[in-house]
Length: 195
Image 1 (cartoon, one colour):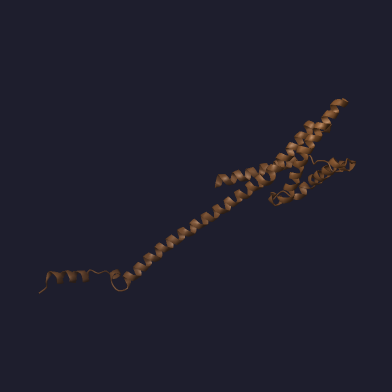
Image 2 (image 1 turned 90 degrees about the horizontal axis):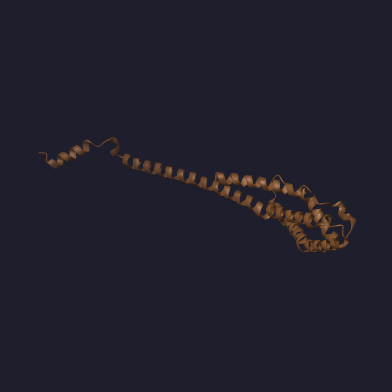
């Protein structure tokens, strides 16, 4: 005679599906683990790619900022200040009156010695030590006339000679630096927008 428990056991055995018998439960568990781990691994790969791209963007932003802050901005401000002082107090502004001319000359010598020459030394230092920060489309050859002028002017201040006239200040240089600054600022702003 069949008892109720025997009947339940019989029904439980007869209702086992193919995926519940043999090795299929183990295979199913392995498939679930493989799929979930594959999805997790895929998410990790996507995340690491995103992080890598963001790191590259940040490094490029940092490099552009460094080019601006360590090279182009200081060059521009130093040369612009020197040019402004030269046009405001330089020899071309000296009056015809002899007494006023001597006073203007004395003011000019003070400005030249305390501001212009130190600024020129700083410009030369930047060009020598930071030229690796030049924009890809800029080259040190653009600055050779400026370098020659600055060295010549330093000697001219100590020994007045007409040789200095062969090394005039390159009038294009401030505009060139300004254009390069504008280009770098546009590149920097474009990178910050997409970041």
